[in-house]
Image (cartoon, rainbow, N blue to C red):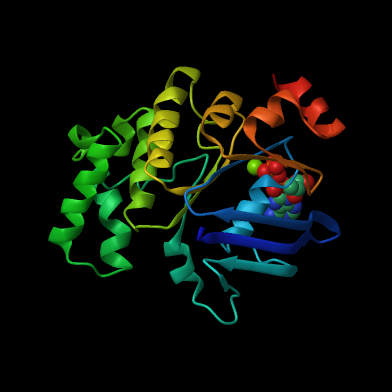
Length: 245
Ligand code: ADP
Ligand code: MG
C-alpha cells in the first residue's frame, strides 16, 4: 500500500517562556485521514495546530509536510500555509467585503490567479457550503454558522492539501453547530486530510479516523473512535471521557 504521509511530527517541543506547552509530540497524519484532537482547555491543542501551520515557531523537533521537512529557514512559510489551510474559532472574515470577495481575496492577491477563474471556483465552493445565494451579501448579514461556512470556503479557495480546524463550532449558538459540522463531514467524505480540534464528541466519534487526546502538553492516547470511547487504554482518557460525555 502506498498511503501518503501528509503530516509527520517528531519530538516537537514548544515553550512560552518558562511554560513548557508541547512536550515531545510525535504524530503522523496520512492522506484522507481525519484526526480529532481532544483534551481539556490549556492542554496545548491550539498551540500544536499553530505549530503545524507555522503560526508559532517550534523550539525543537521536526515537522514534515508530504514527506518534506519544513522549517522557516529553508521554506517560504507563506507557500506552506497555502498547502495547510486553517479555520479558527472566530471567522475573521473581512467585514467590508462581500462573501464572494472574501473567498476570492487570497487566490487573486496571493496566488495571482486570473479573476474570472477565481470567481468561478469561488462560486462552486459557495455552492458546496450551501451559500451561493449569499455571494453578494456582507458578513454582518450572516449567522455565525454561515460565517463559519464562508470561512471554510475561503480557506478551500487556496486549494489546500490539509485542513486544520481549531474549535470551529465553539463560538456558535448550539442550533448553528450542526450545519458547520455537516460541511466538515462533507469535506472529510471527499477525502480531505483534516486535523480538527473539537469538543463535539459526536462528530469525533462519527467522522474521525483517529482520536488523539492531549493532556498537559502530551499526547496521552491515540486510538480509533470506537476503542477510544468504549475501551480507552489510559486512565486519563477514562477521566477525560467522564468529564465530557
Ligand atoms: P488549548 O488549545 O488546548 O486550550 P493552548 O495551546 O491554547 O491550549 O494553550 C496551552 C498552554 O499555553 C496554556 O497554558 C496557555 O495558557 C499557554 N499559551 C497559549 N498561547 C500562549 C501565548 N501566546 N503566550 C503564552 N502562553 C500561551
Ligand atoms: Mg485552543
